[in-house]
Length: 155
Image (cartoon, rainbow, N blue to C red):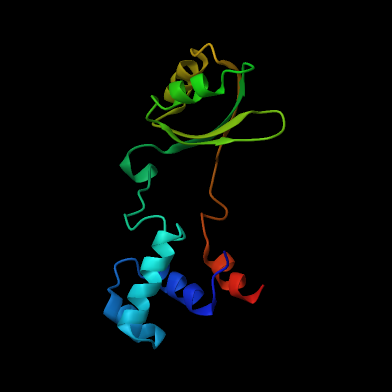
């Protein structure tokens, strides 16, 4: 489902001011507070707004190493692999993928030796056949949705 121009402006403003109240948001957008509240509720119900919690920087809490680990899974053992991965707290996200790898994991670690230990824990699951790890050296474009939100109502 598409978003309209007001939804786009609302979401961009909320991302730029994460602690903003509905009244101030309505003032900045030039619409009634009830309109803002109804839009926020609608966007939340549709899953467009996924959460209202703070974004946490793993680096700032002691995990400066970011790596992407591709996994090849034994045939028919995907659920078993995901269950094993779910027990590793340093794994932030896991995506099912097409191509050479079956899963792509976003992993953080305190050090490269710790990253090696995490990979060993991943490989300890009989469901995981092989891993391939890429360590991120820097962030060139951080996670963003604002350009997408700005372009969405125009399409």
